[in-house]
Length: 60
Image (tube, rainbow, N blue to C red; front, side, top):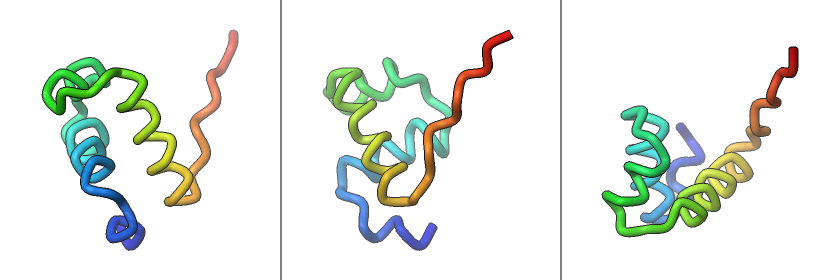
């Protein structure tokens, strides 16, 4: 991931736990001593920096 060098240390830690290892947001938050909203904010920032939009929820 070329954009990885632009991530903060916190964003890298969140990315590694949630995106690479598949941890739940709640588990990553507990491991990193962050709130769930802080983890979600990091994920938003990572998506913004990578130019990725959030997957839309499909309604039946």
